[in-house]
Image (cartoon, rainbow, N blue to C red; front, side):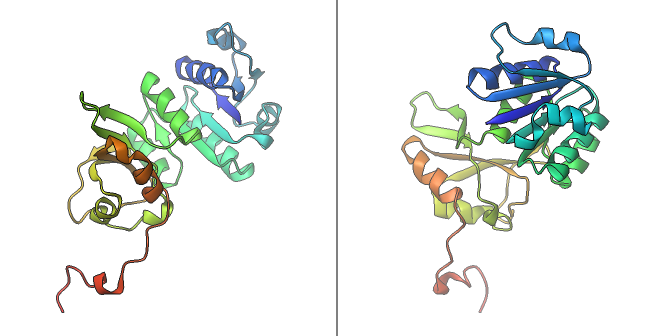
Length: 231
């Protein structure tokens, strides 16, 4: 995959080095050529000097063939503008922006542009959004029998009650991350667009859980359509 990164600060350089080590094609954009010194000595990707939301700069970085774009410069306005250009002008599928102002982050999250914050955690989370890799383990009990993991969920689950996910996938939803904040779901909670789902399941059930939640929910049996409702 070809991935373009805007910003070669602590997050951008760490992200670029990790993606390069994983064998991906990487181009890093920054206005300050001195910033590229943060890249590791083994970095084999491209470095492009220029403004991150400038089309000529982005095209020199290979945005037209990019599978993903991460805007992690030090400026909120630059990041969000560049992210919108990548998505709306060049049709990049996986786009994420780092936003320092949590109030702004919430607004842009609602507009459909994933936003993240903090350094080490940011690099790992951005990689997961650029390169979906199945369940990402948050915690595993010492016996290795129980796992808490963030599991990618098919978009058709949006609007479904969390309890239905638990019943069908044989899991317990430990918590949701919604608009950057964690929340413990109730029996009446409904999955919303942009939610990150963290579920607990038996370690041996990982493939089943990923298969069920990664596919559209099955149709309910006719006799179950009225479950929980008075006749």
